[in-house]
Image (cartoon, rainbow, N blue to C red):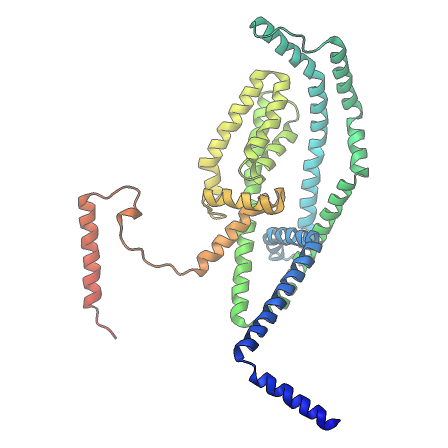
Length: 401
C-alpha cells in the first residue's frame, strides 16, 4: 500500500513537472486577480456599512484641523492643551447656539406675517390685473382671507411650540443631534490628543516619510485655519454692514439679519451671497417696497466692494484658488457629501493645491507667442530673440567642470 502511494505521488509530481510554465503562471495570475477582487469587494462592503462613521470622522478631522491654530495660539501662551481645547470648543458652541437662537423668532414671525399679508398681496395683484384690462377674476374671497388671517394668528401664537415639539420628537432631528454630538466628541479628542496621535502615526514610518507627513499636516492646518479665520473676519464685516443698513432703514431683527447675512454669505460657497440677501430683502418688503429696494442695492454694492477690495486683502495669504477650480471643487464636494461637502470643498482644494505646489519641480518656460495675452510686436520679438541668444552664448562660454 505504501509503495502504491509513493508511486502515485511520484506520478502526480511528474505530471506537475510536465505541465507547461505558462499554465502555472496563468493559474497564479487568475488566483491573484480573484483575491484582489475579493479584497476590494470586502473593503467596499465594509466602507458602505460604516459610511456614517467614516463621514462623521472626516467632518471631525476637518473641525480639528480648523481649530488647531486657535488651540496652538492659547497653548503658546501658557494654557494647557486640554484647557485651551475646552475653551475654544465652548466659544464655538456658544456662538453657534446664539446664531440659531437669534434666527428662530425671526423665521416664526416672518412666516406669520407672510401668511397674514398674503391676502392683501393677492388682492393687490387682482386689482392691478383688472385695471390693466389683462384679466378680471376674483382670486380670493372673504372666507379664504379670513382663513389666511387665522393661519397667521395661529402661527404667531403656536409656531414656537409646534417647532419645539417637532424638534423633540422628530427622528430626523434626533439623528442629527446624535451625529453632531459624535462629531464634536471626535473633534475634541482629535485636538486634545493631537500631538500624541501624530507621534504614534509617525513612529511606524521612516524619517523621510515622517517629514512628508508633517509637511502635509502643516499645510492642511495653515490653509484650513486661514480659510476659517478669514471667513470669520469677513463675516463680522458683512454682519456689521448689514446691521448698520437695517438700522438706518429702521427695520426689525437687526442683529439676527446681520448674523444671517454674515454667516451664510461667507460660508456657503458660490451662491451664499444670493441666499443671504433674500431674507433681509423679504423682511424689508413687508415694511415697504422702497426699503426692500434700498436693502438690495446696499447688499449688492457691499458685495462688489468686498470682492474687489476687502476680501483680497484679508484672504491674500489664506487661499489663492482659481475661480474655475473653486467652482469645480464646490460641485464635486456637493456631489459627494451634499451641503457639508460644498463647505469643505474650498479648504480641501486649497490644501491639495498647496501640497502639490510644494512637491512639483518647476522649470523655466521657453519663449512662445502663444504664452502671452496678445501677440508681441516685432520689436518685442527682436528683444526676446537677443536675450535668448545672449543666454545661449553665455552658457556656451561657461567651462564645464
